[in-house]
Length: 158
Image (cartoon, rainbow, N blue to C red; front, side, top):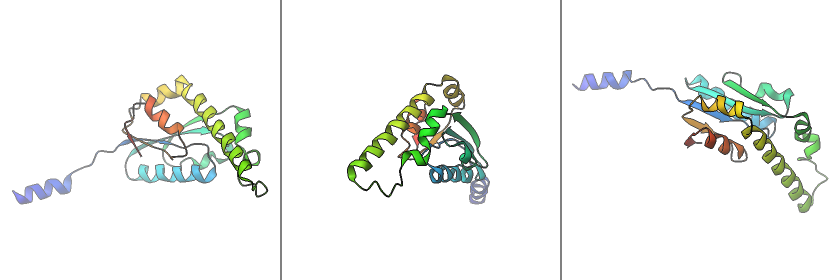
């Protein structure tokens, strides 16, 4: 009896999860980090899809190398605003706190606009809903991921 239970425990096959990773257009390092998470989970046998609003087309290769991708093309004007030169995120000459707050507010407003565009695209959202994902993964800074998970009825979020 014990050996049968041991054999069953050894032979137990875990079912893979369907995982949606939200990769926000926050910058190359963020895209690369979320892409690596997606790739590790894909290699571990899970069914992983990455949704990414494309704000910097030249960096799309960082989204994921192995997982499925749903790339949501942003309007050209929005892409221009996401260019690091226009955001002035790392501008060492903007040392005052008021300038930093203004930059953060502008960046937050841009993320809200991107989220409105994505959540308003019925075709993309329906594509994601039909997948019936088990788990959603996003960054805390990428608040749109939580909205995507909500409309896709994903209840387990990391």
